[in-house]
Length: 384
Ligand SMILES: *Cc1c(COP(=O)(O)O)cnc(C)c1O
Image 1 (cartoon, helix red, strand yellow):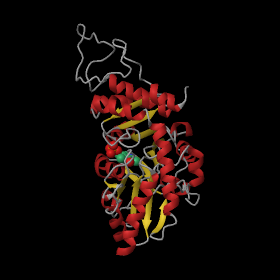
Image 2 (cartoon, protein in one colour; image 1 turned 180 degrees about the vertical axis):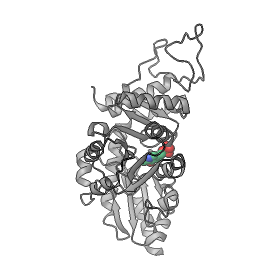
Image 3 (cartoon, protein in one colour; image 1 turned 120 degrees about the vertical axis):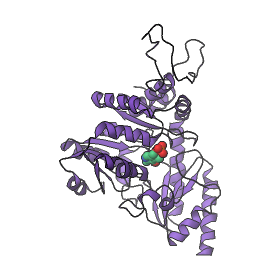
Image 4 (cartoon, helix red, strand yellow; image 1 turned 180 degrees about the horizontal axis):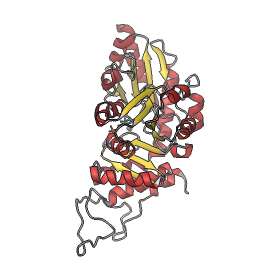
């Protein structure tokens, strides 16, 4: 297999054989002409079942995660929903981390629960707690590492072993690391899911999701549901995602470098009570992260010494860091999870501390980013 950067540029991206166009065209079509009934050209029939642009993205995603099969969807949650339908039946139970993405919890708790699926949210870094939560009906162990927004690190290889000992399917949401920094399948996980909206797309201009796996039988079920439920990625969205992926390795390298510099600066700031960044040696998951990731990524969360009010004022007080949901784009964003990304888990076991602010560190000059945070934190000191 070629190196990661080579795959990011070339996997599934052969030039167009009719014109020689270096970039494969966007097949912006809903259907395909048949040469007589059932006479399909290249197997293409209707856009919900398959489209060449989506295929090129799926080939690329499989190559990046080192999986045999990849399926792309209209959003990360569409990918998760399709995967969970493929894995679960009424009466089944899911064990998931207690600070997974709020939307993942909401999908299980408020959508799938009504279809007879039960769930338990546990501290994934505590193997005994995970083991205690597993019941005879448990089918899926859902891991997110680094987690959103508290950047908890889970030992993927250890959890895969634990899950497989009781016959569970081990799923890793690899959105925060991206395949450039972490490959869960190579660590023993069964399935990887992504919100490609984030680092994989990388430019805050397209929504998408992916399921990547090795098992042929499960892949067939996911592929059938992708077609039968229909939450597929549109051709233009698939093309934009492919375009973003080509620079994924260099972007992740720079996101990590910028975030490391900012985290090291913030730990020393008197207005900051705690910095959650796995690249800091004092982070409780630092050693595991150093082992299973090839970089620590661009996401940082901070707890403000001045409490919830200080967190809100900081989130509204930066200029380069724009106040917005989402993450993983080239531009820096700041968010207040309690009232934004994680509002859906307020009052549950997954609630985020109210003095926490989340940063998606972008690719601007790091000195400008530091100056922006310094200025906003200084204003905070005056106000509180
Ligand atoms: C954003 C996100 C999702 C959901 O993806 P969408 O593309 O917004 O549907 C899932 N997991 C994580 C970790 C995310 O950050």
